[in-house]
Length: 324
Image 1 (cartoon, rainbow, N blue to C red):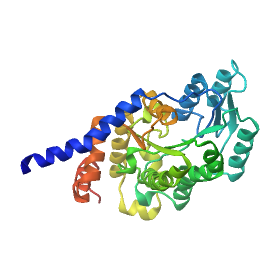
Image 2 (spheres, one colour; image 1 turned 45 degrees about the vertical axis):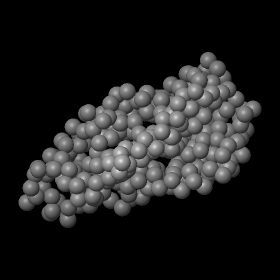
Image 3 (cartoon, rainbow, N blue to C red; image 1 turned 90 degrees about the horizontal axis):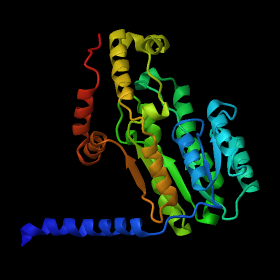
Image 4 (cartoon, one colour; image 1 turned 45 degrees about the horizontal axis):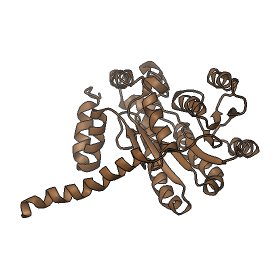
């Protein structure tokens, strides 16, 4: 009898999940017409793809672009020309409070009949480098774009989201769980995860749902991280860091990171599918992990095993070059 207890507990745990999934599939999805969504970081990558997808679904889309005169923004404007008014491109640098306020003013002045439905905090930047290789200014920039930018935009639009019982979607990453040479990016994504955890619980009483998207390696889809140049890294290192590291080490680390980038998926629509579900499902998930099996396995090891196990796995994968 007692031998069957673990199996019974497992069934009791899985049954509600199975019922919830069945209900999600059968329930009616959201009607997009007359609902507005603001997306940050639409110049390229997931934000660009999502703006086009939501526009075609019937949403009123406000596409925030860092460079409203750039190629990405012009492509969005050409798409919008067929149906004027439903896709608007606006300048939005999430590090500038003035840009965020002006974005809200534009949304309010062109709000469709069903109001403001969704905010997608997608804007982000990435880079490569060990902790001591990066300047304090770089850390400040990344925190401002990837973390504070999302918080800044969320706080500005929170009253509207509460009013219309909308959705907030944040772009995180599986890199929130571990790092492979881009600790600065991991740091900001881990912080976003915790901000969302607090916000999700606090917004439940207002009917506002908060979702996190956790992509795996889609570097070739988004181009958020260009290939790394060992020569450029070496030329920018301080004399103190050059005294510790050698060129062979930097080159090997750059090659390792570039090999990871080259393995990235080119099918960014997989991530966009998750973002659309977060905005339109009657029962969206708190987290959408869109990643390869081996990437999910790394997250599993990181979450459930002692830190020493994950450290051993990552240390083995990282540089084999000895320092002088």
